[in-house]
Image (cartoon, rainbow, N blue to C red; front, side, top):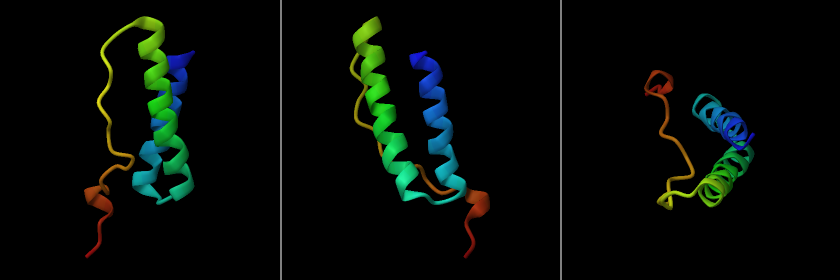
Length: 64
């Protein structure tokens, strides 16, 4: 279930590339970190280094 939750959260994070949503970014990326830590504790493994709480804009969506 943790892994399924993680995939759902990541899908929401990817949506922020298409449509800017500060609320979704704030929730999604912090929840991603929480789930990653939960996976690490339950299954053992290395600590995941801190990662950005945003994704770069999609090149096809950038208009200049």
